Amino acid sequence: MSATHNTLHVSGAQPICPCCGQPVPMIDELVLDDVLNIIQLRGRGLQMEPLKFRMLEMLTEARPGFVDTYDLLEHAFHRTARELDGMPYSKASMLVKVQICQLRRVLPAIGLGIQSKGRRPTLYRLVENSQQVAA
Image 1 (cartoon, one colour):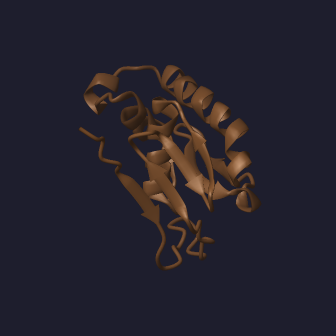
Image 2 (spheres, helix red, strand yellow; image 1 turned 90 degrees about the vertical axis):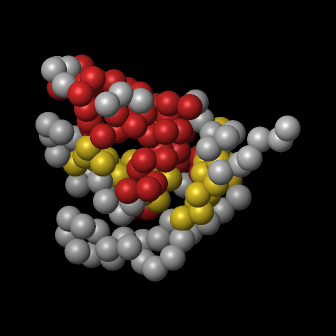
């Protein structure tokens, strides 16, 4: 029995930033393979650990918008809001920050980065390296 590869191809009309209303440059030819946990951009790919891949998956699906710390934590760690209820923000934030930090080290190899803004909760979004500036 062969595994079915579920891939998400991200393309289409130019997205608009929900925060500032400005056009967000497209990330053309972005492909996520959720069986092999591979993210590819224009033929360059990285195989990710499942946890990091799930975070990237959520960031990709939310593009051009931002994703908050708790939503990333829920999605990546398969925890419900109820299970996370009562978790100190500092612990939740640290779990996500460690993964984001590790992703920021490897994503430039395929031309991507992660932009962040705000505090409590910190918000994150996937960008091309040329767009990676502190918001």
